[in-house]
Image 1: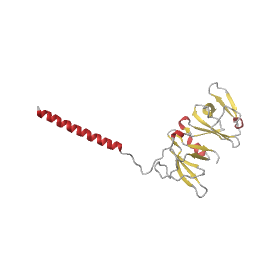
Image 2: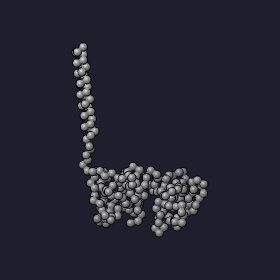
Image 3: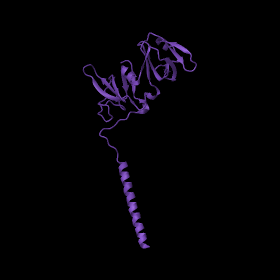
Image 4: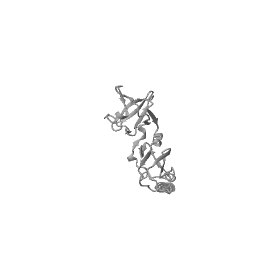
Length: 221
């Protein structure tokens, strides 16, 4: 009887020892902090400029001298609109508008069989329908529209300029009072340049992370 108890006690001690060993190994494995060679600065997604998943792109006016017809989604009524008339319409607040520079841009929510569904008021999110056969407007994807813009703005502290399109790439010192021109887009990364002719400087920033757009689009320098 004593022999059986001793054998049982032996196995209990061995089992406890193994459990303790496994527990220590697990704690050691999980508690070691991950250390990278360079600090990674993550963009502040609480300060999203826009949500990219809310639209499919943009409708940019390319023929400012012509009027165009918009259809109401609910009652199917129509309204004739021109660039000069936009500023007199209280219900209209486009994504970008400047009468003197012939600028008019709407964000596009979706494309149906015959229409583009566009946001005509950025504050109320009111949408209307624009015929996809209208030649006064050109559809642009997000990438096309950003690269077609004059320049862009961004928060350097949370989205610094890097030497290459990699989160661990070397950070370029902040440049004060510079105008940043968009050059090309690769995935979430946007290459920008600044400086002057024959002495351009180049770097990369994130233009979005997930659905969060991290840059501002400027149409004039």
